[in-house]
Structure formats: C-alpha cells, structure tokens
Image (cartoon, rainbow over all chains, first blue to last red; front, side, top):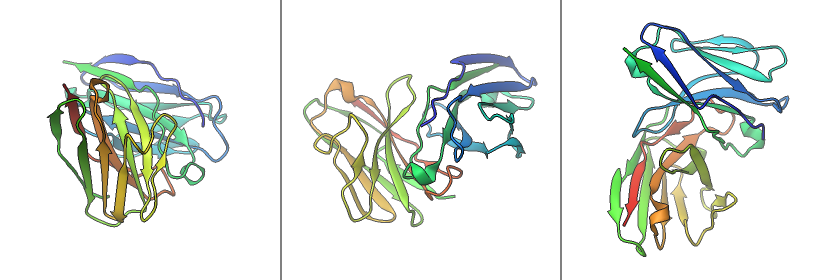
Amino acid sequence: LAKTTQPISMDSYEGQEVNITCSHNNIATNDYITWYQQFPSQGPRFIIQGYKTKVTNEVASLFIPADRKSSTLSLPRVSLSDTAVYYCLVGDPVNQGGKLIFGQGTELSVKP
Amino acid sequence: SAVISQKPSRDICQRGTSLTIQCQVDSQVTMMFWYRQQPGQSLTLIATANQGSEATYESGFVIDKFPISRPNLTFSTLTVSNMSPEDSSIYLCSVGGGERQEGYTFGSGTRLTVV
C-alpha cells in the first residue's frame, strides 16, 4: 500500500484558500486518491476522489500532477466550520478487499 | 449514501468487562469494517466484517479480543472483551461498496472509556 505524507497541522483565516498537499511517492497504477474530512466526535466524511489531473466538486478541488506522486486538496474561501482533520488516502479498493487505510491526517485550524 | 446508526454513542466501563457495539445500516451493503481511533490519533482498521463467515482481522487484532458478528447485510457488532484502560478509544464502523473508495460512510463512533 502506498504510504502518504501530509503536514500534521495547518492554520488559516476565514475567507482564505487552503491547499493541503499529500505526498505518495509509491502510488501504484491502479490506485486512486481520496480525501476525507473528520470533525471532532464524528466519523470521517468523503470529500473528493481523483485518479489524475483535476477534479472539482461543490466542496473542494483536487489537483494531481502527471506523475501522481503527490496531490493537493484545495478548499476555497474556508470558514470556521472547515476546522477539521483532513485525511489523504491512496489505494485500490478492488485489490485491498475494499479496505480504507488512513494516514496521520492534517489538522486544519481556521481562525476568524 | 447509506445511513449508519451506531450504538452506544459512549460508555464508561470497568476493566475486565466486555462491551458490544452495534452498527445498523439502512440498506444492504457489501462491505462493513470496524476501526479504532485512539485519542488524538488517526483511524486504525481492526477488521472486515464478513457476512455469514468469520471476520478478517488486521495485524495486531485478534478474534478473542474483538469478536465480530455480521448476521446479515445491514447489521454488525463488535465486542471489546476483557477491557483494560488501553482499550479506551473511539470505535467506528464503516460501510462501502468495495469497488471504489468513494462513498464510504462512517458511523458517528462509540467513545469508550475504561476505568
């Protein structure tokens, strides 16, 4: 399984764009990149998933360079409610028995 | 996406006792998993709950300590047996289709404190 490396913590202010980068040098050909968000006292919640280039949804954008050895989660104009832990997951559920393997995550703190 | 009801939401237990955590899903799901999240830490996969057969445990977790049942496609239980303070954690169940990581849903967790 590809190992992921993320910053342990990040600080931001309301209204700013936040970019969280995840390194996954050993990503395999069939691996997807998925980001989850976890608020205190809640289970993780799916944010976005991609395989290559750029993916955008109503919550975030995910940028994946051509070599796929890293990815960047972009949160536009964050608010206080975006304070959470963000996890980058890399893997291929078909060959992992459907399992999700979590790394350490990035604790994002948004300040007023 | 599936909706998960996990019970209890929290409990305080005496060491040496056991606690059974329930995970009820509002639809039939292929894959069900149990995770542990120790204070301030990330999630660690305990096991895959297999319908109609024994659960598949990850390294470091054994059936005697964490027996799991999955009698059907909408329900599973995790028991934390012979508890010690080191078992104090949040336990979460998760469900997914198994084909893509997208759309996996997590329960809100059971916060267990062992005293």
